[in-house]
Structure formats: structure tokens, C-alpha cells
Amino acid sequence: MPDASHASAVIDARRQDVLSGKGAHFETRHRCKDGTIRDFECSVREMQVGSKTIGVSVERDITERKRIEAALGASETRFRMLFEKSRDALMTIEPPSWRFTSGNPAAIAMFGVPDEADFVSRGPWQYSPERQPDGCASADRAKEILETAMRQGSHSFEWVHRRLSGEDFPATVLLTRIEIDGQAFLQATVRDETERVRHQSELRQAKEEAEKATRSKSEFLANMSHEIRTPMNAIVGLSYLVLKTELAPRQRDHVSKIQSSAHDLLAIINDILDFSKIEAGKVENRIDPVRPRPGTGQCEQHPVGQGRRKGSGDALPGGGGRAASPGRGCHADWTGAAQPGRQRGEIHRQGRRGRVGRDGFP
Image (cartoon, rainbow, N blue to C red; front, side, top):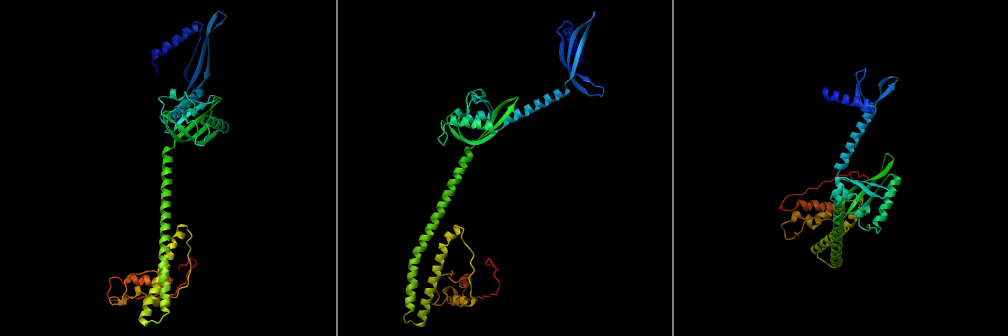
């Protein structure tokens, strides 16, 4: 606060202004009866009343006006800081020339111009290639979009901008209509989408490569399955013909096992072909009747079920496999898993009757 000598000097100067006929106009503060301090606007003039000269002072309480002015000043400072510190490029555009009237530091850096004065010397279409990707002239399209935003109050769109260096980059733009003191203009928020577009391109390329690899795998499985099916059909057919001839019991047993194994291998090939259904999401649960006793008996006659004969001349190489019959396949898998590395011992199988739900599971 000013000291007493300074306040006295100010009062003397105002008195001299009043006595000289110029009058005085100033703002001051008074303490009211209730102890509050309020702001006043004072006008003092000299007036002649008869033979006397008096000073007339008119005072107006401006406390509320000062409060509003302070709030507006703080708000302007806050928005100016938001404008200056935003990482998005912010700029204002005014009709009818539709040239930029301001730009924050992010806009200056985005377009590669030296300063704000150079930035506002151009219009939006001058920071764009001659034509947009759809072939439309940038100048014509920009003016259409600006007029649309003024009518609707807001408008967002994608745009290809060009830096002062000549480099094009994709961007998203939001135009917002603002009106201050009866004057309407647009605020533009521009965001550089170069990184997002690059990531999307990489993801799209990775997706295409993955789909290509999946198609190649499916084609390979289908081709190999068909190639294997041809000789397996020959084995099944020839073994069937051999079983129609006169054979010794032991020979018939061996040929029967060959035929049974060929049928099992064909079932595996069919399962491989079902991969296409899995990839298409068309796999469905299927409930099939199972007869455990015949399956168990067949499993004991199957080569993978002859662990008890391992080490003898009749034992055949190979491990567990899958069978056309669900019950038989399970028994064969269990038996084959228990067999390797064991020269002696026993395998016990036990089952129980249960109720199956609608989804095919207990």
C-alpha cells in the first residue's frame, strides 16, 4: 500500500485539478459502517454557488464490477494458459477470409512455421495438399467444412494436412463455434494421427500375415490328408480281399489287425480334416452311443493293447492311437499310455454307468 506522504501528494494533485476547472476522476476505497471495504468511482468538479465556489463529488459503488473484472481476468489467464500449454494444436479462424487469427505453440511446431505471425498469414487450405485422398480440392472442401461448422456449432472430420516442409500427415480436426462480444469465430483442434495410422497399418499387416499362415496350414493339412487317404484305402481294400481267402488262424488275426489299424488311421485323417471346422467355429458336441464291453475286447486284440505280450516275437511296434469307435479309442489310449517302459505288470480298467447331460457331459 502507498505510504502517507504518497497519499497526501495524490490528494493535493487532485485538488489542484479540481481548482483549475479540469475536475478529477478516480477510483478509491472506503470503509463502510459495517466494517467492509468497498470500491468507489469518484468524479469531483468545481461548482459556483452564488459567491461561493464549492466542490461537488459524485461517487458510485463499483465493488461488484471490480469483482467481475477480476474473475474475468483470472478466467482469461486460465484459458490462455490452457491454450498455450495444450499438446493438441489449437487455432482460431474468423470469417469471411477464413484465415487463422491465432495459433498455440503446438500448432506452430506441428506445421513447422517459425512463429505465430507467420502461421496466421495463411489459411487452412494452404497447410494442406492440393487435393485430399478422395480427389476433392482442399480449398473448396475446407471452405465447405468451415461454413458447416459455423451453421451447426461443431463439426469433426479427418483431414490430410501438409507441413511447411512439404510433408503430408493424417489428422483429426474438431471445429467449435465460439461467440465473444457478438463476434463469432471457430476454434480448431488438430491432432496428428501419424502414429495411430502407422499402428493400424502394422496391425492390419500382421492380421493378414496370420490369416495367410492359417490358410497355408489348412491347405497343407487337407492336401496331406488326401494324399495319405489314397494308400490307406488300398490297404483297407486289399486286407478285405485277403480276409476273403483261405488263411491260417494266425494269419487271419494279423490281417484283421492290419485292417482295424487302417480304419483307425482313416479316422485320424478325418479328424485332421475337421480342423477347418474348428477354425470356422462350426464344431458341435455330438452324443454317440458307446458299448464299453466290445470296445474293451477289441482294445485287447489291438496291437497297442498287447502290452502283456511285449517282449515276445508277436509284439508289434508303435504306440497308442485313436480309433473310429469312441469307447475303443479311449481304451486304446489308456492302454498305450500305460504300456511304454514296462516289461511286466497289469492294467486294470474300471467303468461305471452314469447319466449324460444335454451338452454331452456328465
